[in-house]
Image (cartoon, rainbow, N blue to C red):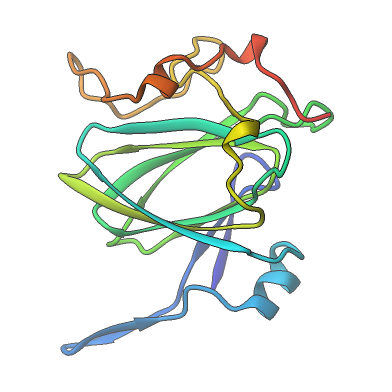
Length: 182
């Protein structure tokens, strides 16, 4: 795997080595010993898989207790994936980073615990899979408003269109009113 640093030191993009020919391709998506040595000494306890249609925006979610680190990737389609540092004592507190993840580029992003996370589907549909370092606990879930002007996330939403949001995502808090990790 090739490790690509981002503008936020703890966020990493992982680019696999792809072996292919006219029959198809093979790639390794995860190996525990390599991940622990080069990225983070964590254990994953839950895998999730979602499918979303074009224009859906999911996020920006995080859990204050049972905080989840996530290793995310797209196996069909394309998304614009975003993470926000919610760790009050971090040098990158309040910074957001976004990148395209797709079945074509086969990249993954490591998002440590303490970040809010979300994505916008740019293709006709997308299947999104991710590993989590803790279990989903909806009673501890928080949500930051996806379009908070203080964060100024540059979502690739076509002009004149609005993303499709869940009621939970419409009710996200502004970053300045959100609960942070201390």
